[in-house]
Length: 111
Image (tube, rainbow, N blue to C red; front, top):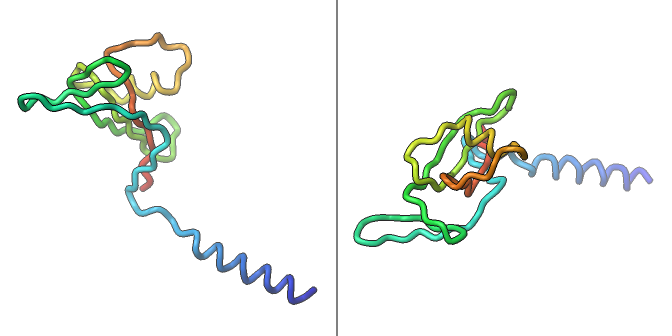
């Protein structure tokens, strides 16, 4: 019985040491959609769900009371979208469906 307990403790210590921590500032993807990127005469457009967008934007910020920063990757026809608008839209179930932009990826930034 002592051998089994000793073996269990050794394996636990080895596994705990091998778990490792993600690299600093690593982006941890939590949500992602596939889209199509097209270039025509030097102009790039992005398509998803039969709708085309002019811009692919990465927005970084921190939600209220969040431990980590979040990032959103968005397809949009507007050049600028605030983190607050994206964060509210992503986490809310009551916001109306808008087609000015679509969130194609969300994740955390481990620091």
